[in-house]
Amino acid sequence: MTRLYRTAALAVLAGFAIPALANDGNLIFNPGFEEAAPVGGNPLGWGDFNLSTADYVTAGDPGAFVRTGQRAVRLPPATGDATRFQGWTTNIFRPDGSDLFDPDYEYLGGDVTVSGYYLVPEGETLANDLVALKLEFRREPPNFSIYTSFEFPVDASETNGEWRYFEVVVTDEDMAAVGDFPPYATSVTILPLRFFGGDFATEAPTGTIYWDDLCYVQGDVSPGCNAADLAEPYDILDLSDITAFVGAFTTQDPAGDLNGDGIYDLSDITAFVDAFLAGCP
Image (cartoon, rainbow, N blue to C red; front, side):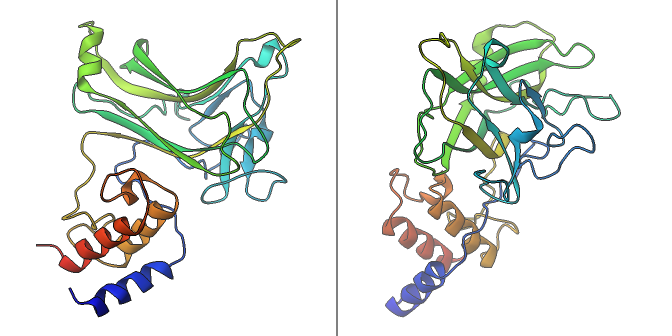
């Protein structure tokens, strides 16, 4: 690759607008909360625990934060015993009552990865709260009972008004270690939550946390021909791959860390350019 080609490619990357990064294979219905339910004031496919319609925010709302699109959800500080536990859940029935919005799961059919973004406004700190993503693996209907669950605390004390990426994984080994208790799980409830377990008189909760762009996948979801093939159509390197890389790199999504060192710098850009110009086999 000549220095001219490398320089031209870097210039294209540097001048690109920052897009949202698509999550191919995402099984969550309405993962970015963009579609509102016809009634009730919640995002379609999501229920709430101890929240109000005001916590389903729009980009134009005063003080609200949205990562991509026009909508996001938030968890404000608890105000009393009735709101100690707050959360958003996929565990609600579809309009026809035939099933839940929980995404599908195949027992021991591959590792489950759930990712997304959260934000705490600049100047705010979440204190005295457990903030976590809970995954409840449920049996098939009409049972719907919880086969097992995993709770992953999120380091959300403060983010200085920046969106932070998180990713959690439940492996087949984790599921097998639970034991053999059929019927097996066939779906997963996605539940970002907040719980205040302290004394309101002495240690009141503080701060607000926003969530956006959640993703649930099972198994391998990287069908590209090389490290630069990040977006559909796969096996073709084109503008969509550049767009995806710029979005991942600028938001510090792991897809933008091409050399895997946890640092987002020129070496990742160079690695992308080299892979992109090498082309697909």
